[in-house]
Image 1: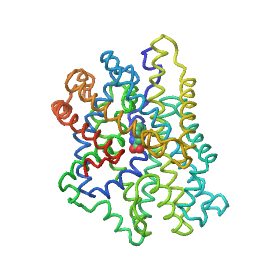
Image 2 (image 1 turned 60 degrees about the horizontal axis):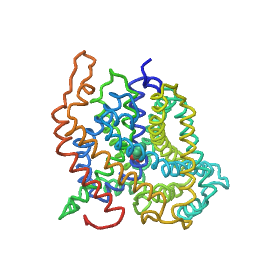
Image 3 (image 1 turned 180 degrees about the vertical axis):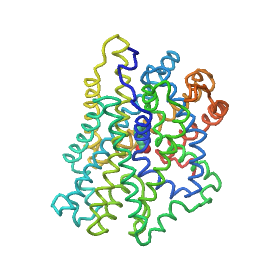
Image 4 (image 1 turned 135 degrees about the horizontal axis):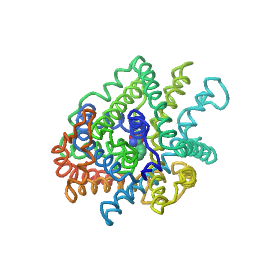
Length: 472
Ligand code: PHE
């Protein structure tokens, strides 16, 4: 048996695509993108975002998928195959999902809580939100350590369960059902949202081009913001696409996937904007980003919709939950896969269950800590000057490790080892011809465009986390 089959393999092209898109589509699309687009130039931001996806996202995604498929290994062993010193990059990329899981799980747990609360409202029970102010309701929830921890652990349990079942029977099967369901639910919410009176103002907020944000040095800020958003949204620089690539079959077309995944991710992000912002404006609320948008502003919208509100609330938080869990599944698989490589290296059989539940327990400890912090409401020490544990974890993973690892990936494959991936990317198409159609384009972007962009993203992240005001 080929070694990599010990960990699993995708059963179909569609299954892989759903799992990869499932990883990409997450909270970043739902709460980050619409808000950032609205605040940073509307359609003008969108154009910049699309250009970045084409010249940076597609290229790094192709690197990661083909690296994984060539080695058939998890992220640490994959980079080690390039040379001993390169393993450092593997380690950095592996540590990011370890950290992200801590806070992502807590937010996933919040989604479960809101599905439950809206079900409670459908039946008019006491565990619904009722007529309580949504801001107060949210504060009461996240400061309640017991409840926060329970929902966080439930989310981690469900994630680990799917991952422990395996690549094709667990992750692929789950994503193949969940992702089309998410799409369907999103369409229903868009129809409701866009037919509310006053919805057009919300559409104007996201789409109206505003080129004034590019004035002076403003364009650097927009570029850094769009770049950071794109990396997080495509799950790049975090071991995931290397790991998912390692389960691909040799006959799968890498170039096609490197284009399809970002297109699907971007479409869902724009659709999320069309679902969220019209409703926010129709109710005369202020648009926001982050947890406040999802759990306060939108809950207010559902409360004000009358009888049908909780039904749409349930549908909406259900879809956010699916988006979050398919992403956390990919994070857990990326962490576990690298550990499974150790058994393989020692010539031992892979015990997927034991390893994934081991990772699950680690994430439970981490998630409990983040949940106990209650978004900074319990006086935990401020790490790296951040007021919540969530922000501290996010700073290190998304803010530092991710752009560093992506920058290193571009330098390795563009400058240090050009050609290393060529034979992998140039796979046989269905017509029996081998081709690497975008080769020239790939190397041009990898050498000259990605590195300066990544440095900019890195500076932009540091600037925004520490509020240094370099780019304002
Ligand atoms: N891409 C996911 C999102 O948009 C988040 C994520 C980041 C998932 C990193 C996995 C890894 O929310």
